[in-house]
Every structure is written in structure tokens, then in C-alpha cells.
Length: 426
Ligand SMILES: Cc1cc2nc3c(=O)[nH]c(=O)nc-3n(C[C@H](O)[C@H](O)[C@H](O)COP(=O)(O)OP(=O)(O)OC[C@H]3O[C@@H](n4cnc5c(N)ncnc54)[C@H](O)[C@@H]3O)c2cc1C
Image (cartoon, rainbow, N blue to C red; front, side, top):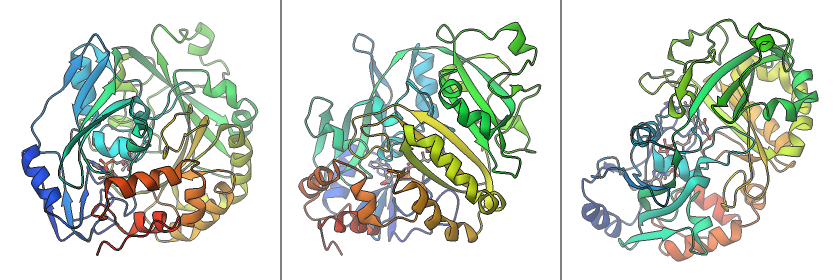
């Protein structure tokens, strides 16, 4: 068994996908080493285990919406895009989506996965409650009013196996997507706040070519963002570029067929907030990804610093994406306690990438950059843990929830061991 991109070979002794919560409870309580696996989209060994890999995808369950409270229970093993479709069919929405909807709900929230938008927090931040099977095999429901809840959402699979997730929902809304071509880095950095506040969700894509130009993808929320002016629609200069005349793919020269519709078509939120359509596989997995979540006010300076690495980044890169998100309260979220900018790299699947990761870390880490938990990074575990003010509280939760260390793996051992939370679970 391998991860989605194929470069991580899992070391689990077997894979189980129970079809009832009772069977899951028995499996977890009877195992000495076990770990939840979502859709295996992470680019590192975070989801790996030497024991049992367990999926919740076959558990029975459906959406349960409480319209009065604006809350919906969603099966944790469902793909996020499917949950989004079902919500929309009943007139509801979540505030944002990641670049594609193929990823499980549980895996999405366990790693602090995010989309973009100055006023949009991570997807994990829309979680109001969780149902999970604990190490002892008990079924526990924990909600936002519990003092430890903020440590239980972005939990890296360390606290239990999540079976259902309670999401905050809002009435369905429409999005119009546009792309602006030929935006040079200088214009982006000079007008950083103007660009990222120009729509509900904004991404900047760049390949770090010598010309240092990129594209703005904007997702305008109907009824909230102003319609485009005639001049903007006519291709007048705007935000350092001009409106694209055809549909685009984030990677130059790639067919945009599988991308969500652009050029102003009014679409339901879940068909335009992701970059890729749910019914298509966006690529073969022939890529690696790295992302650092940096303090927003440091982002323009750090992007300028990265320009020095551009000649080395560009040959190894498919494309980079810059996104924003507002602060949240989740202890292990990349956006914990501060407005944040995600500096993301979609790499070619070549070993030379691994040689560049320490340099990226040396540049972005000391500036408070937190690597995305589900992507590739090369960081000293102690330094990494120190970038999360509540890391020791999280380590305390792990010790309480999982006293024998059955959910631990090498990644967690390194992280928690760096804060003297040792456990020999083998
Ligand atoms: C093509 C592609 C595009 C992506 N786009 C984005 C993006 O736009 N924004 C972004 O932020 N990230 C993005 N990612 C990263 C992705 O969102 C994360 O890696 C996410 O964690 C993957 O979810 P998964 O279900 O595959 O989880 P897995 O990789 O299977 O597991 C990740 C973690 O979640 C835990 N987990 C999974 N299921 C459960 C469960 N039931 N209970 C408890 N813990 C569980 C695992 O133990 C593990 O620790 C992208 C990845 C890919 C491959």
C-alpha cells in the first residue's frame, strides 16, 4: 500500500475497514498499534503505522443536518467533495474547500487543510464537534465547549479514530471564478493586501520562472463581492495583470478540462471553491507537495527572499500557490493565533526536491513558518514543535487519550519525543 503520490510505501501489517462502529471499537481496543488512514493523500509518512491501518470509509452513515443550529454531522470517511454536494443539495454550504474534494473529511481536518480567503479560516476551524473511538475502544463525542476541544481537531490521528464530524454550515451560496494573467511578482508584493482582499478567495500561482510572473485565481462570492466592471471585463489592466481570455490550468501548458469553470460562470460554492472538478482525477499523482504556513505580515518579505532560490526552485517545480487564511484557535493548526499565508510548492516527483527542502525550511521556519502536516518538509522536530504555543498541551492530551501509545508512529515519536513525551509502543 502506498500514498496517493506513490512515493511513501506504508509499513502496516494489515488493512481493515470495519462496517460497523461496534466492530471498529473492538478492533481499536484489541490492537496494540493502530492508526487511521483517510484517502492517503498526504505526502509524508504521517498516516503510516507498523500495526493495523484502519479506514472509516465503510462505516454506515449519512448527513444529519440541524437547520436551527446551522450544524451538520458528516461521516468522517466521506470525501469532502461528496459531503459538500450532499450539503448543497439540501441548501447548505461550508465556508471553504481545498483545491480538490477527493480527500476524506477526517484527513482534511486532522492536518489543518485549508483553502484561501482573508476572512476564511482553515477547514478544520469549521468543526464544532467530533465523534471518535478512543484507545480503550469507547465511543466519545467531544464538542467545542470542551476545554480540550481545540486540541482535538487538528490531531494528526494521535487521539483516536474519528467516525463523524460536526461541521458548522451556512446557507448555500454562489461563486464566480476569474483568472488574471501576467501578474508580475513585483506588483503582487507591492499590492499584497489589495490582491488578497479583492475577492472571497484568492490564490496566486507562480512557477518562479526568471520573468517572475504568475496568475491570480479569484473566487468571487455572489452577493458579497462586487461584480466586475466593464473595464475589467474588457481586459483593462487590473491588479497588475488583465483578465484571462480562456480557461486556465494552474500549470502552464496543461489542459484546463478538469479545472472548475472560470470566466465568471455562476456556480454553486462546491463547484468553484476547489480548483479541480470532483468527477475527474486531476493528475496521476506524479507530484510532491510542500507548504509553509507563515505569519501574514512576514509573507511579502519571505516571498521576496525566496526569489533568491528561484533559479533552483523553478527546474524542480510544477507550480507554487500562495493563499491566505485568517487566524484560528486550534492548537496544532498552521494558522493558530495569527492571520496566515500559505506558501505552497507542487514539485516534480524527483529526488532532487529532497535536497532543497532543508533550505526552504531554513528560510521559512525561523520566520515562524509551520510546515503543512500533510506535506513534505525537512524540519528539526523540536524547532517545529516550538512554533506551536500550545504544543505541550497537545502532548498532554496525547498522554491522556492514548496512554499505551497505540496511535503513535515514527513521526509522532519524533515530534513528541522532542518535548520529552516518550513512549515505547513497539
Ligand atoms: C492533489 C492534492 C491536493 C491537495 N490540496 C490541498 C489544499 O488545497 N489545501 C491543503 O491544506 N491541503 C491540501 N492537500 C493535502 C491534504 O489535504 C492533506 O494531506 C490531508 O490530510 C489528506 O487527507 P487524507 O484523507 O488523504 O488523509 P491521510 O493522508 O490518509 O491521513 C492524514 C492524517 O489524517 C489522519 N486521519 C485520517 N483519517 C482519520 C480518522 N478517521 N480519524 C483520525 N485521524 C484520521 C491520519 O491518521 C493522518 O495522521 C492536498 C493533497 C493532494 C494530494
